[in-house]
Amino acid sequence: ADKLEHEFSWKLDASYSHGDWTFALYAEADESKETLASTNNKFERMQWALKAGNEHKLDRKATLWWNVAYETDNKEVTPSAGTKTETDYWAIPLTIAFEANATSWLDLRASIKQSILDATETKTATTVEDKGSDATTLAAGASLKFGKLMVDGTLSSQLANGTYQLGS
Figure 1: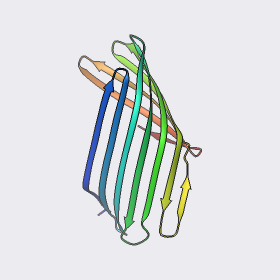
Figure 2: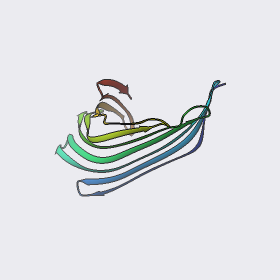
Figure 3: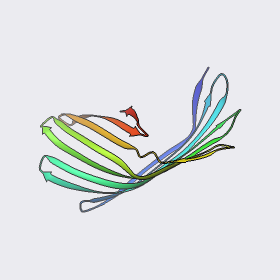
């Protein structure tokens, strides 16, 4: 039977606020093993991001914020039979977002994230490929408030190299 086993995983989020500014560090690592009928694959991944952002209250019901970041994502896939693939990605994206309190029980938000600079390098035993994705991510979300309980959801769509990808 096919299965996926996580061998090791950790995540770190830290932030510091000073006035209207927030500085944040995010890091995550994961090692896993996928067992399939035809092959076994080992996955290793390390992501981290360093962000600086500013928040501006437009009025008591609406907020505009933005941030700029340096993000990396390094992946390595080692199949039991075949060629190991390493993918290194880095980006400097700018995110602009808006959130408003629509009613006493509903908050609405939207954002756009555009990579100012980015690059992806994929290495196999015989190939090295470099490319930038020029990715744009659009997102919209809502929070429904029921007393102290809040139900939150977001949909996002990324346009990268002319292809849309929908996420949630």
